[in-house]
Image (cartoon, rainbow over all chains, first blue to last red; front, side, top):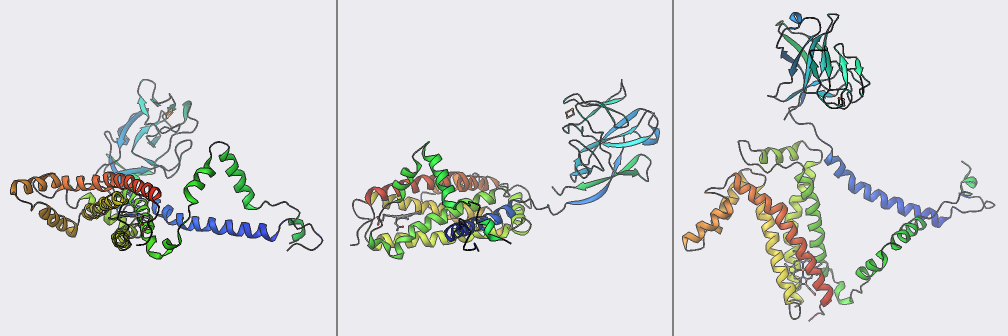
Length: 179
Length: 239
Ligand code: HEM
Ligand code: FES
């Protein structure tokens, strides 16, 4: 270890002291580790990803430009939608319990998760202004999902979706929660 | 690696860190004094025999039961309504799905069994060394109550998995509890325990509350009394 000319301040005593402190710490960690493992949530048995068929109140192709319809995630069995993207409070892979199918003012269809990108409150359609408004802190979004007014800074999250075989329906990526 | 440069760095011995923390604490409350008063007690030589450890082992087992019990309660659902009942399925979930759930449940189960053995051994040693005699009669009585509490723990805990064994074992024990004559009294005891005319969801609710709220509080209190008595009397001299 220390050569004979250097001042040996890292002494045998110090080394042994740290060795014992290390052993003590390791013992505590070994004791606590199984508890932490036990506390880590195991996925419920029935939990699985699956495409969810959602019947819209008004079929997408019949929506006028600037019109939106709200839909909810099925509750029996309990299911959530999976966000395809998102910033702020939303993130890809995060879950949403509802959404909006919308034709923006240019006639382009979108399917958004219901959660505001600020702190996740469910947004609502403002039919007068053709916007999405958040009741919590006043964020507002254009119908194409982009921010019109803060505090939100990120656009709304898209859901991954495709047109269902029945034109009244869309098929959205979801997660059956298993409880 | 050039160790001579490492040795230039003044690496503190862990004790220096320990001393710094303890001094900070002691300036605010005399922790060292209190802990010393509590722990620096001479154990008389005659009390070094292994059977004087039994009471301490009971204490450690009870702490283990409290810890594993708290962990189990994170997943256990005390609800016996429906088939299968959440009480049953939540225990299956702990056993088969929760990470290391089988381990925590197993420790709680075997700890409960060991506990009874150790309490009986402890009691046997107190009897064997004649330590129940004056002036320690009260501590013997406290001990008897704790023995009954331990048995009540086992009885109420046995029902919680809500499987066939749990259900019918509890039916039998409640039937026994309902034997004392006159029949009206037996019937009264039975209904109070069951929370209704049969062993059902109200029974589980009662047993659960007794098992996780009432008994732990009582036994903690009584252990404190038990240990204060021991400190007051000192360990008894052999006969
Ligand atoms: C239920 C949990 C119990 C715990 C945690 C416990 C714990 C202890 C401990 C740590 C001691 C110190 C001496 C030793 O360990 O042998 C002790 C002493 C004693 N215990 Fe217990 N005990 C329990 C139950 C009982 C029972 C069931 C009885 C008898 C009915 C009993 C009667 C006594 C008496 C009389 C002493 C004093 C012995 C002496 O001074 O030599 N205890 N107990
Ligand atoms: S959560 Fe929508 S504005 Fe804050």
